[in-house]
Amino acid sequence: MPHAIENLQVSEDDFHPVEDAKSRLGRLLFYDPILSGNRNISCGTCHHHDLFSGDGLSLGVGEGGNGLGPKRQPGVGDTRIVKRVPRNAPALFNLGAREVRVLFHDGRLEPSELYPSGFNSPAWRWMPPGLESIVAAQALLPMISAVEMAGNKGENDVAGAINDRVDHAWKIIAKRVRTNDEYAGMIVDAFADIDRRDQIAITHVANALGAFVMSEWRSFDSPWDRHLAGAPLPPMAERGKRLFFGKARCATCHSGKFFTDQQFYALALPHFGPGRTRAYDPIARDLGRMAETDRIEDAYRFRTPDLRNVALTAPYGHNGAYPTLEGMIRHHLAPSEALARWKPESAQMPSADWLSIPDFIAFEDRRERARLAAKIDIQPIDLSDTEVADLVAFLHALTGGESVKGRLGRPDRVPSGLPVD
Image (cartoon, rainbow, N blue to C red):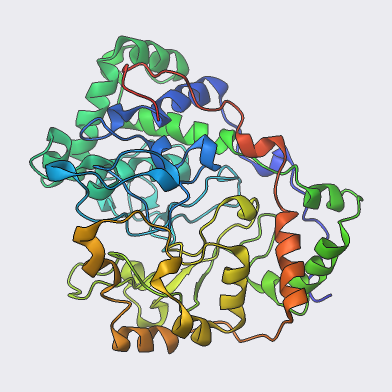
């Protein structure tokens, strides 16, 4: 077997320590719409406990939508969504692992000594110093995204401030939180660096959110973990394991304890939705890592996802192009052919008539599909239907037990008094 499986057991030592008071505070903030511009959406809307820290959609419906998960709708009238969230909402399992060093599908958040915050991010030098983890830094970015939580210019003071300078928007959100008596008391109690509510800053909010996410979804109680401790896998999963680490070459990229090398690869996944590209690019498409690095060799490359609990987190791909694990595996076997036969009906998105043309304008562009097909980093592999089924069985064996429900769970209420999704 080309890839050894020794030393893949996960333990609490593989995670950063988290203070419980911060985590419990972060749980409330995570589900509180007070952090959004229009006070109508929370982090938990797109990363919900009932949906295993995801939302079950190919592309999310953020600010302006209503409902939860696959039943979420894009809104109506003047408050309806302007566009879909450009990327699939990733699950949050094991983000507290010490080895996590890059986040988002395109890696646009990573440690860097070039900035006072210690992170290279879309906020550049305006990302505040004092963040305790990369997960805390990540928690700040949806708050300043118009389509995710901020809303559009003219709708609220947060959205307006973003157009001035992003950190001005965070100051508004921090003020909302510290002027809430319940939050103010909890934050002062949880953080040793302050003793008065007027000292509460957005970093305290972010660090509490980071602590919650890092501790809530630690998951290493799967059949795979029991297998590493000596228990046998079911026959199909055992065959799938041998394929995964051998003939199918999955472990070339999905390596290590959390099944990711945290690198970037082009797979020719079909493009749809608004995508993310460079500010001066006139085409609605998704350039992946290239939009961050501006290097042509990074075009259409996306980060290798962690595979623990992957059976619970459909749809798959950076834009949720495939509703099943089998479909995603078969795309890996022959990317060019899979791109050619992919149908828009595979996308799991609520209907929005006003987005029907922009949703698939890049997919219908033959030149863009040709560019995708010309940039593939993996080699085709021949597997039988039985072997594909065995691989699926192995991936199901990576599903945790009680851990997939989270440690603290969803709160019934939040200090703002706003509705909890």
